[in-house]
Amino acid sequence: MASTDKGHPGYLDEPESRRLEFKERLPKGDHLARTAIAFANGAGGKIILGVKDSPREIIGIPEDQLFSLEERVNSSIFDQCAPAIVPEVYLQSANGKTLLVVEIFPGSNKPYYLNSKGKREGTYVRVGSTNRKASLEMI
Image 1 (cartoon, rainbow, N blue to C red):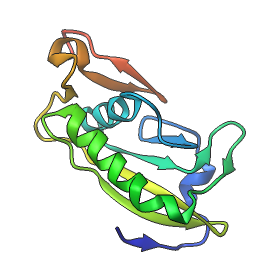
Image 2 (cartoon, rainbow, N blue to C red; image 1 turned 30 degrees about the vertical axis):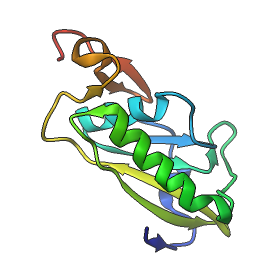
Image 3 (cartoon, one colour; image 1 turned 180 degrees about the vertical axis):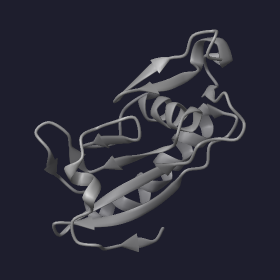
């Protein structure tokens, strides 16, 4: 897990979009996996943990939680998604606080889907700043 410090990353000034998602903390259930799937099925994207979206506020991740959070993120995405999605996870400093950046690259084995729901019901795509279940035509 590498750390990069470029002061205030430019993406923090951008709205959530087709390639950018902010989370104050690790989402429960399969929400993180759905976003990873939608990004992998599209143009890729970044999930930034430690940032409240509305109003935009840098919360940061406590240092004693970083390693376990990184492990939970990797396990959640790897275990819940098929074909396997391996995110690039790294630390980034912003305003003296540490963020966890989860970067998902466009996949080469599309469609990606939730293991638990199967290809037909568990394939997601990114529409604007939201994840939507893909139609059969899209799959």
